Image (cartoon, rainbow, N blue to C red):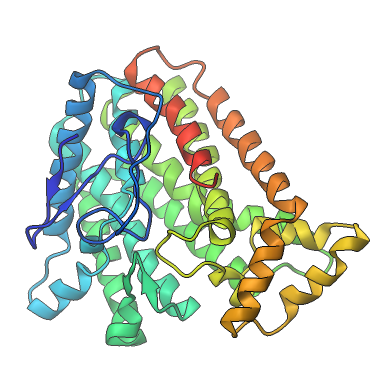
Length: 365
């Protein structure tokens, strides 16, 4: 698989799904791979022609992403590229590329622009998320708010949002409308997460709505943007939007599990536990009526600032029945996402999206 060059001369492996034979995590370095992380052997193998096509498009997107994050001053350019140059899964641009295969041949400039819009929007939201979460690490590197302070991090996020807005305006009013609707959902999801469930509201249902708005919405838009730039049929656009929404939720729920089960991501295992961030496994535990879970529930509410205490809670949670329940729920939703692919024409792009359902789930295995 071809790699793409970044402005600092390092490379990032852009395709992170089964076709590529490897994947990235948020813990990757600027070389696109986490230190000591083994490459994953996978079962799906695309033709070299299709692989080269996708890789070439992603290479163009990567170059344009760095260019769009440029600025009039070196400082703003450095800060705006801070998260971008640290690598990333590029999951949203990948969906744009794959979903552009279900219509006519897309104009290359429009395809690249659409992918850059969704990735800039995603990256901009990470700057704001890290401020709100008081995060100290992002993709294995110091977060922007830790390095330059909250005010700079917020303004850099705003700057990237403005760059996304400029880019989407060149695609036309339909793209602008969808981008605005998506941004509205992103913000409402963040507010709902910050406020928490209202009195009497089911915490798990509230959380799943937050996941849909904060993560599912932009991933669905990525799929639709791909379909739109290729002038896909209305039926295909609808199928891809539904697929994107569901696979986006699966993507986030898998991350929930990774926070508990993995030791090879970009953030310290148990970060969400320590910060009392609700996730699928902890919400399932809190909803459990099993008396044997009572002690672990109490531990979740205790002070987890001590590393040893956190490690003990992680060990017990990893052995709890809710982990398998969470995996089953993630698999169920991935299977539902796959059903939306049925009306799409057969071909390597459809096979790739089908394989993506398995790859997203396997991240949490």
